[in-house]
Image (cartoon, rainbow, N blue to C red; front, top):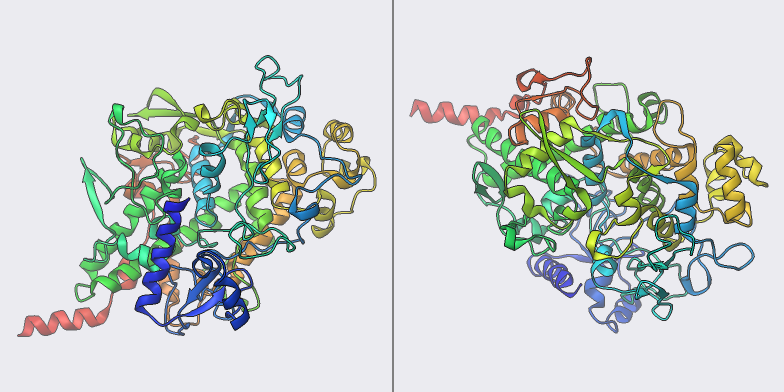
Length: 636
């Protein structure tokens, strides 16, 4: 992690050296007091690691790359290094250890829970496309980092010889494997490697007497930080400084980010896999197949917008072109996520009824200065449920014909594959042709038993998801039932209103008490709500988080009434776009696509020419001052 933090420190130094800033406490979100400053001075790199530099907020400015001033009342919230808010207070054991059962004993093995309550298999969904999977995964790295993967998937060993849990290291939370495990009983593997996420306590920012809180290195917003970076210094590094463009190079006829990231740890140079793309967030951007493919599309979309704006407004300089292209790109991303993807996940009527989306063409001014920007712990953990609709196999298509498959988990940290053998185009058409896995109680076998590929002897994403809930200190499921308007259970039979009886029987055998049941375990087995693909508790968590993003973000694309807001005309143009248009404009070789691309091809959602896919008319951003200047030049 040392290299990563050299980059962070350099970014903070660059900001401090070039502009007057005010130091805010990263965790508490308040200006640094003299006592707090003196305390941080006693910690190695305490000022870098535990503070957020904030330039004074201005009424006339737009969205900052570093996330500060997203809500001027809480100027440091929305930046990197700020904590994830909680719907309910943390629940840990003594000294921030994992929460024990009600009787003080350890909670059941999450591997045992997962294999008892969920199956393994390949079942394709009848409606949703793989594109929905990839874009949903991309949405996560846009607002929470996955740096902790380096901590345990690559660098640590919390299971000695895959048999003995390493209990001496407080960073370790190994997952016990039962002797009669249905898949591993003959392997000799008796535990799975896992470490805790990094917290403010790890860096000395907080004492262990306070609840452990996750340390987040990206802006906790829907702001395309994967493309643009999380600091002003980083954003300057990836710009072309001409025409508003992001720096690029050509790989054949493919436009890709310039520079080289060091994070493609599984590239195979012997097979000529040497490309590793220098996105704004060059770690998360190169991490997973879904992230490096989606990041590429939105990277190209920025440059497409900048070039088109330059043609419309020849008097604009580099900065104005860059800022406007970025603003449009982020607005498109937020619109696609809220109005196209989320309604497919939770149901259009549910999204409308909850206030997540609105049936209006104009501005929706629901910004609330009292809301602090962030992403809820419960959202970050709970939405891991979507691993159920991720396939471990990527089918490759060329000219509409299946030509083979790739194993998804083996392509983690391996974006160099995009440059070879037409793979980017083949994977793009995979998102068009291949259905997602079915939304059910079943995991793809690779995800359930070898999520880290050859890097670990055995690894189970479902068991990890449940353990991450404990690592985050999430209270039991029963407390979230109360939060979400359901009756708290006194007996296991009281769960029948949300969980099928056969699953409740297993829960009663695995847990000693209803107040022991983990939130994530319950999310994995709840029945789906009418019209959606999620259970009632996850629906509640998702809507809480999406409402927070809307209301806490002054610059959310639908908000109006401030200088940097979209005009009514511009907002209407944003609402003309869709993910199919992004594919048409930026996907390699895409000339035809289904109009509703998050859904699979069907007789009612069949291929149409890209010419028939609606998009933004950028004339809504025409600057009439440029036209007057051009007329004046012609007269001369």
